[in-house]
Length: 330
Length: 118
Length: 94
Image (cartoon, each protein chain N blue to C red):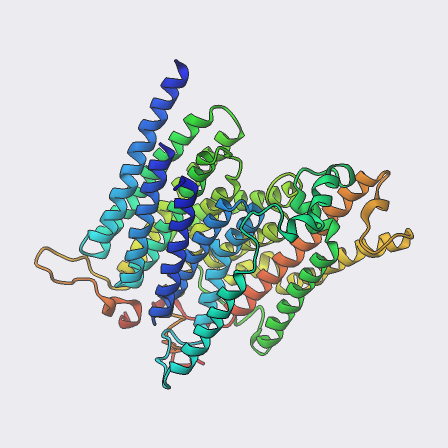
């Protein structure tokens, strides 16, 4: 057995073990920690399967934001999972049958990495052959994501936009800002404050690198937005929500949520005005490649803006739920 | 000849790093209470991680990869001890007592923060 | 040699996972999740060298930068006791 197969199998076993532990434990904090481990292992597995862009997204979500949001949700609910009251035989049978059907379905799938699989012979050869001449950027994933499949990505951004609006609406009754809302600063944690202060700059710089390096390597708007939001979230965690709101007011963040989608849609509209199809960036520059470069840059920026703003405003909405507690109480 | 030296140096780094990582993980699972586990995980993870990264740097030579590895090492060097410090601080404030030789004050779930009102 | 380091890291990861499952305190779990994160950073790094394409260190870099956010979030929410089943020390909880 090759080393690659050993790594694949052990990581898969890790995933299985983690999932089983998540099912087994009823203390929900342990489950939050385990799901962060689950995300770490899946990122490693995706890197090993060569899906680096997907791994990057998984890492950007799992490294901080998903833990923070899950904790924020726990703050509003209970710390322990309730023991089931009814018999679990029927759900077990349903799940078992569904699993069986899914496994049966995989029998018809082509082998992993089969060059003759339908997905490899449909449009993929065209993307691989034409990206260099038509788009002119080294990372084909970004070319497909932002240009060839620009409509799909616009749809995804709209989904994030809608989800963000939905969360804000659900929690809207509770959003009181900015006074009366405070998450304690961590004044006594000198080490934490100093290290955080040192790290916020590099995190933001790294987010910008990921945003603009997406043409050349793994990365792009989605990942950059998440990393950017992480920087704000860590600031709010350590220096207090009030201070974070002073730096970036909630109203401004909510405005940016819409701005990102608007930028994406607007780029498509401009190409409309030049008499081309929607989201055909070729007309934006002096020649096709320059136009594609500019278009991809703009839409990726729109994606990053929306993702970052949705994450930050969701965090604001959740963190604002915590009751203010004075210093004497802990 | 240089290739041999490079390989030997990097292997020495990698081997000692791997050894420390495994020892740290063993300590994490075998030590009797939270603070001793903290010691095993915190200290050994920092040194083990940096040794492995150094081994990789020697392999990579002078390139962008080395710069990235240096950055990873630097960030781990700051964040890892900070997290362990924060965890230890939080555990102590929450009333989790270190386990003393006679077994008194063993850390259990009852010492989780909800039990302690201050 | 990379394979040996890889094996060591995988073994260490499974031990950390064991501590994460066993607990018993919250702090043990946070500690082992944090240490699992460090090991994943190394694993992804070594994996790049093992497959001969060490270009994907950005992901390791990302984890090295962001891994402690989750830890701090857990500790913060615990420290300020805002997660205790909605019970607020002020007595005016939700």
